[in-house]
Image 1 (cartoon, helix red, strand yellow):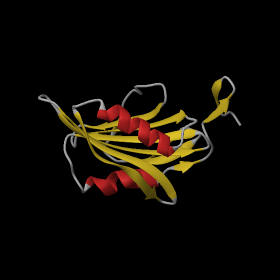
Image 2: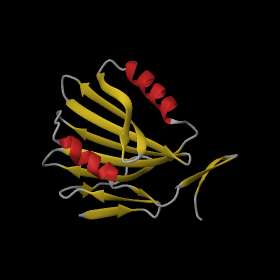
Image 3: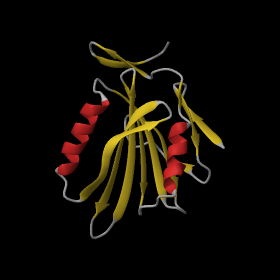
Length: 154
């Protein structure tokens, strides 16, 4: 088993996945497994919003896109924490993608997992939940300030 750490969080990374360059300002880890095929993205971003507000915002944004079908948008207990879970499918003439997103807020930091693959598979539930369950937060990465946010250097 391999671990990812950035000094703020540690989590298990699955075997058979290769790291790819981060795409996005707050992306901490991006992995791909072309044999499954599956992509995993883990992000940390500063936030002033709680999970109910994030849920409402996500649902509003997704309803405006007719190519995205929301299957599940609900809260879920993982370990002893409450996560917002959003399961959606993107269907076009060219592609069919399933996306499972899990979001958790602690100390004004939004921890977000995104698992993307081309089909629905119940056997993958334990696979990605085990990755989420392995997360250990050492300290908040971002601290909110009057001017926005800064990286926690304590």
